Image (cartoon, rainbow, N blue to C red):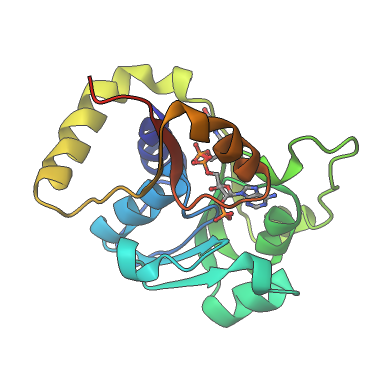
Length: 203
Ligand SMILES: NC(=O)c1ccc[n+]([C@@H]2O[C@H](COP(=O)([O-])OP(=O)(O)OC[C@H]3O[C@@H](n4cnc5c(N)ncnc54)[C@H](OP(=O)(O)O)[C@@H]3O)[C@@H](O)[C@H]2O)c1
């Protein structure tokens, strides 16, 4: 179902077209990794940000390690010299704020999640909203349950590409229930690469 967020958000909110410049944050997460791959299959130019480098595994055009970037605005300007047509936002906060001034005219921002704001007593403010006005850009939040009618189409689309090896899936597999606590704690220090999964038993 998480992958379905990527499909619904990308195709319904972002209205993608071939050749568009697409930025996906949390690109090693379940949703971000699929968004980037859907965008590539659609003929877009894709840059992902994550806490590690995933480009070789997921086939994006570029990616960057957001933990190493002190200035997110400068990083986005470096990777999107023409600006961003589509930002699929999984993290919110400072990354969303940095993306806003880098949007192109008629750009689209899909607000999927705000993982960077989880647990903060005072979420970070967004200061660059006026860019939506001067760029005639659109920002829209969405929840997967509003798009459930598309679920059969999503399965057909993704399974087809998965069987052809054109969509891959990265998960961080830990063995045994005894590893669950450390894996859970690791989520908060962003140790996982891809979806954190615990393999409890084979039967
Ligand atoms: N709209 C909806 O219907 C819907 C439904 C489900 C989930 N969501 C949201 O969608 C987003 C992605 O979900 P997912 O299932 O793909 O998550 P996931 O597989 O758990 O991946 C999330 C990734 O976010 C990154 N991250 C963690 N803390 C971060 C921080 N402080 N700042 C920036 N990045 C951080 C981590 O990767 P790195 O350490 O590599 O950066 C992590 O792997 C989440 O915000 C989630 O809440 C929305």
